[in-house]
Length: 123
Image (cartoon, helix red, strand yellow):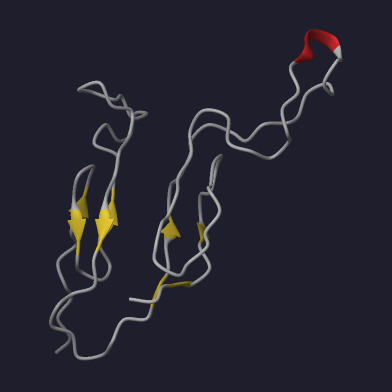
């Protein structure tokens, strides 16, 4: 008999230590509405202390992910309104991952059904 692990839902401020945990915006299915003067929704993913096999990488699956789109570029400096923006950078919203040893670009826009490359760190 195969027992399934219970689904764990984490939200802003959570520390995740269990494989298969789902992160959800606390206002889901609506857009995130910051409270308390901060517009940051942060979680931490920590390697479980007791594990049968060492954890050496992390894969993020984006089931539903839709935040502000990246910039589309603008006229070059000195152009109309002098509002140059480098194309492809997150303008308002971004999702970032930080890890010792991993270099991960910020993500923005729609990522429904996508996944990260396997993220590796030193610790």
